[in-house]
Length: 335
Image 1 (cartoon, rainbow, N blue to C red):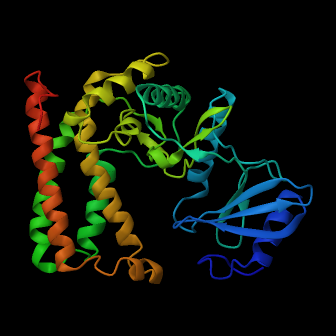
Image 2: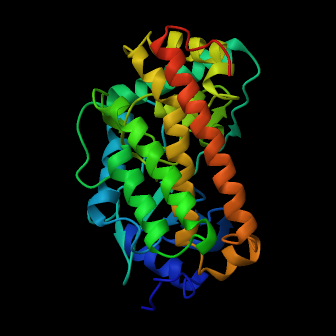
């Protein structure tokens, strides 16, 4: 069998052969590639007519244990009747198939439209869904997943960016000084925070609205251990200080299923900074990928880093203003 470590050899014939042997299902020749930059995802059709999704995980990104953590989380959600897309059981009784150099999983195809937030009720619906996911998330801890903490995940990402030589030399000192200053200032806020399994990438694109069934959370690829509020803030239309109504609606529906610790609201802007660093590290890891460089020709340039430092400086200002406002009991008093 050819290697699929870099996906270059993942031809329709190879992927169908791999999936058929692992699942015991016979497929037609249909292989429709679906949008996914990190992994390779295909829609397949069984000879019975059923449509399935084959997801080939990018080699060396996650360990087998980490992928099993994802599947266990999905199983816990499904057992609690939370609408998610759980992987199919393969012929050997597992949910994770093995190739020469990586892993894959097979999922049932679940269609739906991206959820749109057009009313207060829409926010309440998604707040309730996230609370139910967190009820399942608190049931156990994963064995090999990222812990979302400034001195753990964010510090490691910054080390990778700085020591990897990705920052233009004339901006390296300013970038390192600014980001380390922010990490130092926000770390105490996380010391008494609850940590559970969370979705980790809970933006609007990862919530489907299925007619007649309701909302469904998809793509748990970036599941992690972190503060529950992380799965809420990415749904906000703006900074926390300008999203008071949305926060209140999300929390109100969330608390119908699970208690929310209001002190976590103070983590929203620090988490936004951490997300920026996470994304910078993610893009830095793709820097040598031809497709990435073709689509992002200015990544890593002087102008790029000048813009990043400016954005991070603004975010630091927002963090500090919110921190003071929170301490003075006027967190939503404006920016």
